[in-house]
Image 1 (cartoon, rainbow, N blue to C red):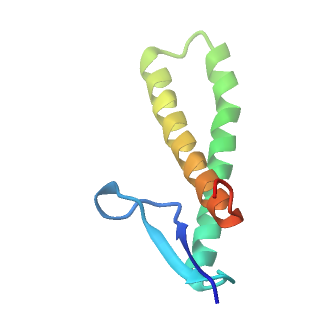
Image 2 (image 1 turned 90 degrees about the vertical axis):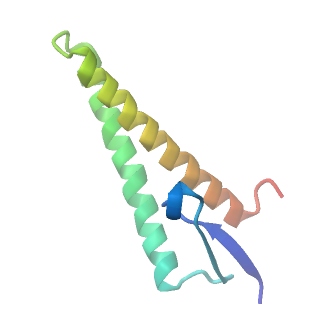
Length: 95
């Protein structure tokens, strides 16, 4: 049985990386929760991108709203990169 550490889509304590060590099947409850969370994170990022064009085209949008948008985009990008790294690790990319 092969064992591989999976980078989880949420931070651990103190914002540090959080890993799950599971068998190669990776179909336990924490793995399924991580899969669902990754889906939620990617969907949220896609929906946020949908708002970007609308906000940028609206001349009434102020600096505060744009700063908040940039903050949300940074969080979504961070999540998407973590998902990509986790999935790449499970595929053996970069080994």
